[in-house]
Length: 110
Figure 1: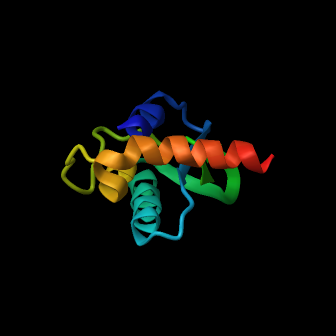
Figure 2: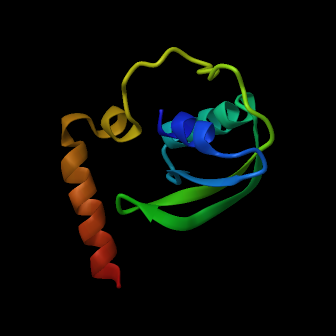
Figure 3: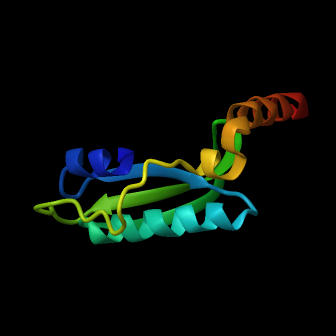
């Protein structure tokens, strides 16, 4: 939904930056591919994908750079929205603790 709102507010010719999970888990890969399909179906192109450029919630992320080519009349959701998030799908009720551990680990590395 965040991506849909961002795309709606971009002007034609404008650029946006979206972070997606960079993880060895197959679900992270699926999330990134679905996001890219969503971008392409909703009036934008992908200018560049930079792996590991940012850290989102303590985890490495792809930085997906998009450019809006046209407005769409209605958002194409591709799949039915099910209200689940990547972190929760992978770690369940322990997703909060996973985030705390990931952030602690990254701080200790510095």
